[in-house]
Amino acid sequence: MPLTPHPSDQQGSLPEAVGCSRWDELSQTIRFHAGLAEAASTPLEFRLLNGADPVMCGLRNDNGEEHKFLLELLDDEPAGQTPLCAQIRVVVENIKSIEHELRDRHKRAAVIIATDGESTDGDVARALKPLEKLPVWLVIRLCTDEDKVALRGAMRRVAACLILTGEHMTTRHH
Image (cartoon, helix red, strand yellow):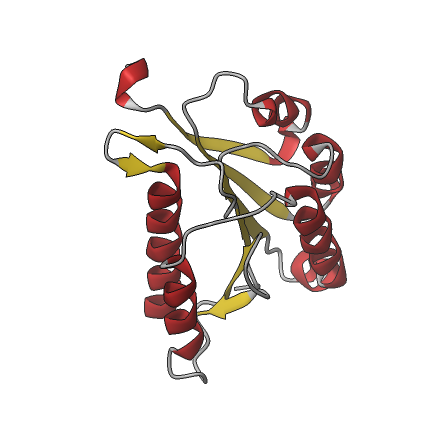
């Protein structure tokens, strides 16, 4: 199975809702996927937007060290901007570098973006557009209760390779 980039929003604009912040929700999602990658020995790359270099979990030869490191990173509260577009562009280039191998093996890379949706560095739809021509499955995990999240509209414009999941709303909107 190919590397699976997983950009994750770690910005500080995630307010508290119903005793659990959006950061809590995002970090729980990341912990789940990291644990699954470790258990399956399937390489999974995590790209936290504001805190660290990419972290690779699921490697058979690191004795779980990267997984432990990622869990430590998730214990810190997020801060800063949300450079989502820059990370998406890096992921696009990484997938382009293995595109022929993926196509030859009839495989796809999974790109899972867990975010509250507000990029601070550009047009998300434009950054995602190149993925339409690449062998990928794109999953967007929105953790927000804000109706104005621009990412939803961007996703509709890049729907060819998209699975939009988890438009999680807090209980105040149910």
